[in-house]
Length: 299
Length: 299
Image (cartoon, rainbow over all chains, first blue to last red; front, side, top):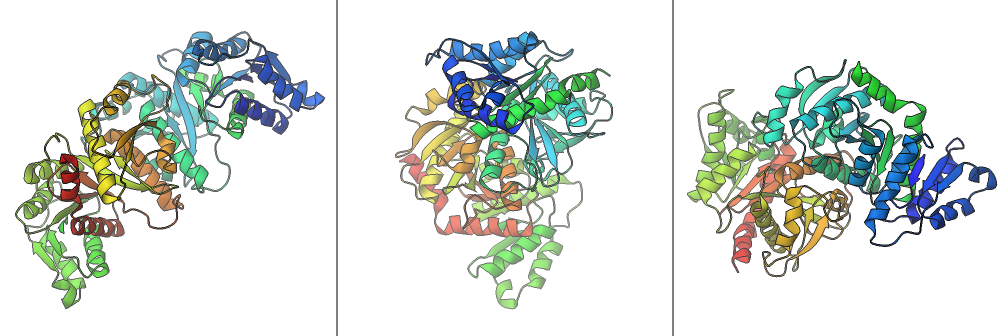
């Protein structure tokens, strides 16, 4: 797992913390730390010799505050490591835009995907739901939302084992004519044959459906609304009790539409969030989820 | 309180239920039921003679399914009753668009307000927050968001007694360049002198801040994002425990920018939600909140 040490509002401290947690929690996880040698050294110094053997580094000059060019080059170096076969996945809490662009350029996009999408998983009262996009594309057009519907359906089928994923379009009321121009145009397009085999469009859903899980396994929206809703609900569930007891999905999103495993954590991610993002990336890689999703879509 | 009996997905049954609750819960509330005589009769039949004396009706032919023209005329009749002085406030769970249009035309808009805004109140970990717009304007321009900021600040000052309301702009990241075109244009505009006396713009906030209440008393966003976030968080708080124990704000929104008290409940509102909306309208009227907000803005 190539980890961007300088990604995030509280980097590198929380990334160091997250990397330590991730290595110690799962003896089969190997890390490639990308960033300042000082931060990587902190991780190595805190580990036992046995654990240390599972950590490699790509050193770099110390970070210079305000030099965002260098900071963003951290995720580029992590993507390059995956492209060159030195790592299996990228984990970053840095700028979403820089991560999406680096991944699209460095790993390549899937056929038919112009804009990759960030997919998050939320617990619901009845199970879990895939919400996308959560920040990669804030001003999508119809084609971008159709791509998201396809990507999200394939993710639910492969990662959640749902044979017939139900795809809903997030809007603000189910009466005809509700929603903005984009949302009013989508139902006719989604009702066609755009979704992968088994998946079906089930119509309009609202904010409450993302909590109850009623009616849909996948909820499609623009990256602005999706990001706001995700951060609101995740924080509500963190302060209080999630609607369903049991395993809470990691607070990290998976980039869909690029030829590699890329996990994006919040800019404000904590150490445990980073560790959960690394664990998610490792799990996706072990299950070959990303190539399976690509294969599912190309069938 | 003029109550639109045919407003809402489950009308008139839940409105009848809400009206009953509202009359029985507060001996000073008077209702003017607007809609089918059969539904109004159900309310009257279930009340004691003393309570019945506080309910009047504006009868109408029975509703005809699918005849939305008539259904929307219910809220028009309720607005007319307020305009004519037969009632002090309107409560409807019907179409938001029809309610906003009827209120703007029937009651008049405040000076400088082109689009009225719907303001909701959410509990937070530290108090409560005013979120607007939650559905009146799904495609706002810069001017509409500036109006919302003014309306929300005045609401927080008057209704919540906050001397120096802090106004935040909802977006998806606080780094420069995040958010869509509209959001990137707003900070420069909000930093000017547009806000009413005492209020100040405190910058960008994110979805999690609406839950924690950190940093802002008023959160401004477009009606699409606001509606989705409101329904998501309200449903999360209903299924689980709200972040703060104590009084939970009613699940109803106040229309700001028109010369009258208008409360909008969700289309999917329950009877207790309707009753809470009626109680909110009565409370706003007793406190002369709407004229106070208008006066606050014109100072």
